[in-house]
Length: 156
Image (tube, rainbow, N blue to C red; front, side, top):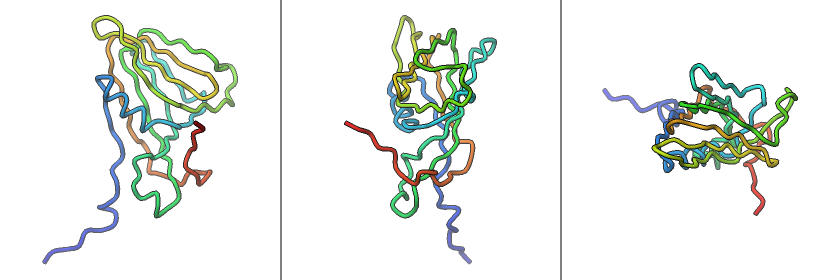
C-alpha cells in the first residue's frame, strides 16, 4: 500500500549555502538582502578568524508568498578567513541599534585575498579583510510571519 505525501514533506528546506567565489556570493547576497539584525548580534572572533551575524532574513525564495503572509527566518551569515574588520556609519556603542543589510560583495585582491563588504542601509558599511573567500548562510529557525506582514520595498 502506498501512502500520500504529507504537507510537511513538501515544505521548503532551510537554506544552507556556501560561497567560495564572487558568483556564489552574489546569489547569497540576493537571499540576504533586506535582512535586519541588532548591532549586538555581530561577532568577530580574531583567534578563529571568523565574523558572524545573526540575521532576521526575509525569505525571498519563498514561492508560497502569494498564499500566506511574507515570512522571515533567523539565519547565520559567517565569513571565514577574516584578518581585520572595519566599520563606518554605525555606532557600535548604541546596543539598541537595528541594522539592515543591503548587500554582500567581494572586492578581490591578490592571490584570492580581498575584502568582503557588507553594505547597510543609512550609509553604513562593514569591511572585512579576508585571506580567502569563504562565506556561509544557514537558516537556524523555522520561518515566521514577518511582523510588518509586508514585502520589503526598494525605492528606485
